[in-house]
Amino acid sequence: MAKNKTLSYFTNGILNENPVLRLVLGTCPTLAVTTSLMNGVGMGVAATIVLVCSNVVISLLRNVIPSKVRIPAFITVIAGFVSIVQLLVKAYAPAIDASLGIFLPLIVVNCIILARAEMFASKNSVFPSLLDGLGMGVGFTVTLSLMGVIREIIGTGQIAISEEFIIPITSAVGIEPMLIFILPPGGFFVFGLLIALSNKIAERQGKKPVENAGCEGCPAKGMCENAEGCINNETEEKANG
Amino acid sequence: MVSTIVSIILAGMFTDNMVLSKFLGICPFLGVSKKVGTAVSMGAAVTLVMVLATAVTWPVCTYLLMPNFEYLQTVVFILIIAALVQLLEIIVKKFFKALYNAFGIYLSLITTNCAVLGITILNFTDGLNYVESLFNALGAGLGFTLAMFIFSGVRVRLESSKIPKSLQGLPITLIAAALVSLSFMGFAGIGG
Image (tube, rainbow over all chains, first blue to last red; front, side, top):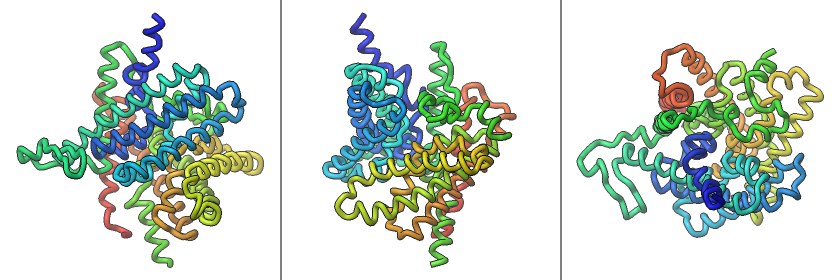
């Protein structure tokens, strides 16, 4: 029983609460960097490292950080790890650094990491937080890789593992690639279809489809400083009149 | 000088649109674009914070961090933005009550908006000077507002149309975004 529970911290992030497809967090990097498989994997791994490290540290500090300043404190911890990862990637994987570009420092504002800090790490002990971070990170990486594979195969007709090692897929049988899939519209399109698919599967299992992205479905809703900070219909009306 | 600035603003609004071609600020783009009014308010708030954040981060980075402490850029920028947003919220709440009612509630959401952090970092990767950076932020903010405005119009239409069951909600929103983004690709080549 205890073992199952420990395991569920890990698998939760991959299946039930897949951060991208079920929680709809971290949409910016999901859409932007998934032009190829390797980009997706690189982004996923970088975010996973930050997620695991920040979850562990925040979990260790959970009794020390006063709740009023917890968000700035979390962001500082996360930013620290992002800088470390950024330096490491620059030093050892310059190709990934070049292709991820600005999205590497932007891991700081990736909602997945802040949301897990707020929802999980600040309430749980170190080991579950570590597993949660790892599970969410793997879920993120798998989804990003999936999107990367789909877009790269349709958009270029091949999969490029490195500059020399390229596996031709549809280009081998002479099908003209649809370039639009590695351009921005393709990102939105593939992501939309993937969400539709995941909704369909969730529906079969008797779960609700994801309602909406952004603040409404955001599990980190409670973290906005004012309770009214998040836009639900009530505040929307307030804002309008 | 003037022509550079015009082309920076045009690029920010159309060819390099923040949301539709750079994928920054997708969360508010999908989350706050249900009504035209709220979408434009959010856009205005983001534009304001972008310009202010650039006004502060550019000198800090150029005169304090470069050339030795550039690796601190990410940490310093996010802290500056967080502090700035808080400060702005307090000031607007205290002195501009009407303004606060119009878009104050969006301010606290902006701290973790990747478009704001993105533009401050992009100013340096693109090697822009202070004035160019400010206009780059302005252009990007206007582009964000434009995208929000257009997309909220599209979504109002979506509400009243018949959509296959499995595509209802988020999937059709994303597919609509793909079409809006496709139309913005038509601007490629202008301003460059």
